[in-house]
Image (cartoon, rainbow, N blue to C red; front, side, top):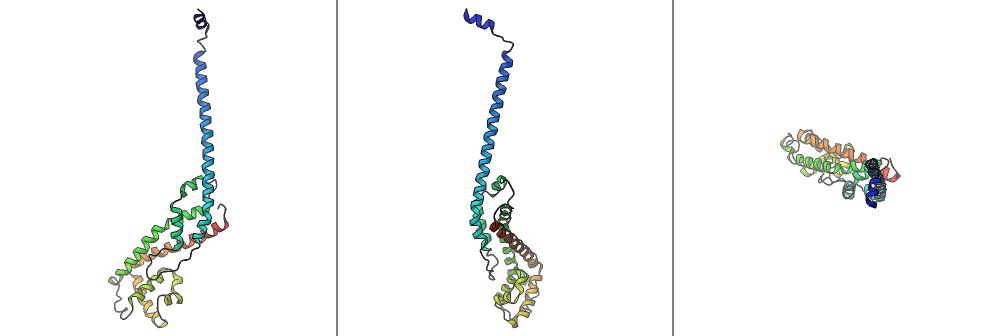
Length: 229
């Protein structure tokens, strides 16, 4: 009888609204907790990324200041600094760090730009070497090159590939040329470089080299100064 009396006195008109309010409140509270948890995790991830990036900078600084002794026997030897930076960066989530940092960091942007040049460097250098191997087929240099050393010609072409500064006296001495030989060899090298099959990859290689040197200079300054860009 007591149960029947209780059921009889229950206000069923408010039951459904009360349940809806209760469920809605539960959903809202749950959502707030999830958002708060997400914010906490996001802050933790950002802090971890910032710490990892800052901790890596001393190692990058050491790699960035490696010198580059130009190899006149083959252009396929990559700049040591580029190789070292790429090997360090390869195991790191640079894109994730970039998305997590509160402020853009120029050093990180420069590092990502630098390491992206490695494949381009390798491709362009290989193309120049391949063109150098067959360039005699496309230029009328047999007469000009009569009695000249093929290895000296190739070394001087590579010296020219490194840029305008490589055409100085120190460059042709490095190529093994004497003062007497310079004029003749320079004429021959000009013939080779003028061949389209050589000119195109050579120009691409020089452009990549220039971009690398400019980016590396900026990167060295940024990692030395520290802080965000």
